[in-house]
Each structure stands twice: as structure tokens, then as C-alpha cells.
Image (tube, rainbow, N blue to C red):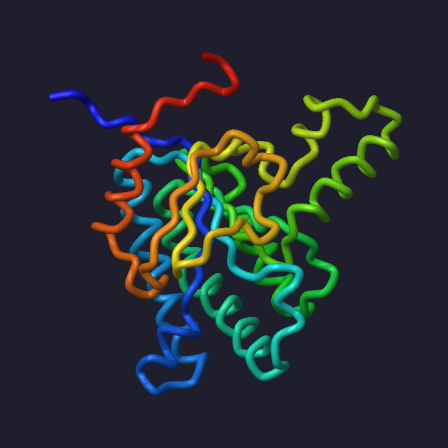
Length: 228
């Protein structure tokens, strides 16, 4: 039996929490809580399958335009997530990296994030990137500005070195749940040759079997990178 190819780096656009809740007659915040609980399940399974790095799109730079009540609830959830799971992350040799601009986040959330990053800095088993206040276009601008400040030449290779996810490499597979067919400003530079997998399954319902389907689909594809 042919061995299934496992993507080394997987990016996931976790979409559909609000619609999942509304379909059950609940507030959107109910869906965000369910979606947050699903993160641990999928992270654990992905790493058990041999995925080395995961990048999860938790809060985009455009999400600030949502109602304040929803944004505030999402920020609380993020803080709770980091506090709850950081011990598990450290214990399981996972390095936590938050990608995106931290300047708009509250001081207490920044503190929790930095504690998590610092306590897992020496871990080398897996990398878990959480994208918060993240935008792919903004990331490219940030990388180019970093090169200009350091006096380095702006090249494809140098930009890649300055991206938030540089230590994870480019994503082999990008998954989007929730039935939408777009990248929504996620890993635009890194995802130039990523395999894309879209599913109608809403994020809270995206379980281990659904992740296995995405990995199997990835393994069936031939990646040419512009070659024949």
C-alpha cells in the first residue's frame, strides 16, 4: 500500500463559527466558543499525523470591522485559549508563535501571548502559529520595510526570511472551512504554490476525519511548482 504524503506545513482558515451558531438559534459568540474548543482537537490530530507546523487564522486585520461585542468576545476567547493550553503546548514540545501585528491588542493579551511564546521558545517538535490581527498584504509590507531598515536587498529570498512564518517554511496545504472559496488575505506570499482545499463543513464540525480527508486529497495531487 502506497504511503500517504503528509504536508509538513498546513494553514487553516477556520471559517463558519457564526453561521454554525445561528443555525442552532444561538448568538455568534456561541459558535466562537465551539470553534475555540475545536482548535485543540485539530492541532493534536494534525501533529499526530506527522504535520510539523500549523498556521491557524484566528483573527484577521479586517475583523476589527465586526461589531464591538463580537470582537471583545473573540479577544476574551483568545486570552482564555492561551492561558488554558500553553502548559499542554510546552509539555508536548510545541513552539507557539503568534503572527501578525500586536500593537492593536490589549496589554493583558499581549502579556499572555508573550508568556506563551517565551515558555515554548526552546521547543523543537512542532510549530503552532496563531494568526492574530494578521493580514497577508500587511505582512509583505512589514517584511519589505524590515529589509529596507536593515539595508538589505529586496529579493524573493530575503522577503521570505522576514515573513512571520519564516521558521515554518511555506505551507504545503491551505484548508478553508465554511464553504467560501477565497484566501481572505491569508498567507498570500507563502501560499504561492500551496495546494488549496475547500470544504463546506463549518469549523466547529471540522473533526479528525475531515482533516484526514484534506490530507488524503493533498497526497493525491502532483505538485509541479511550474514544471512539467
